Figure (cartoon, rainbow, N blue to C red):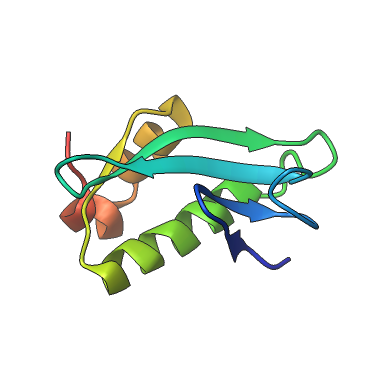
Amino acid sequence: MDVIKGISKFYIGDSEETALAEMGFIINEDDVIVIEHTKVSDELGGKGVGKLILKDLVDWARKENKKIKPVCPYAVAQMEKNVEYHDLLVR
């Protein structure tokens, strides 16, 4: 399953508009990536795609030298639980 970086989301699917799974973000005035939402279709639910998308977003944040502030409950839980993401976490 390929994760694609779009304009304001990382997603799995044919396009941003018809994504089967997505993690939406903005970059705020402090140049921090704010994860606003995570959506996974019933078709992909329970297959770990949320974690897969988050990993790609985290990898991109590291390359761009940016921090991440998750506000989406799923992203908050995953980033707090995963110690290897703590260096990027802004609360």
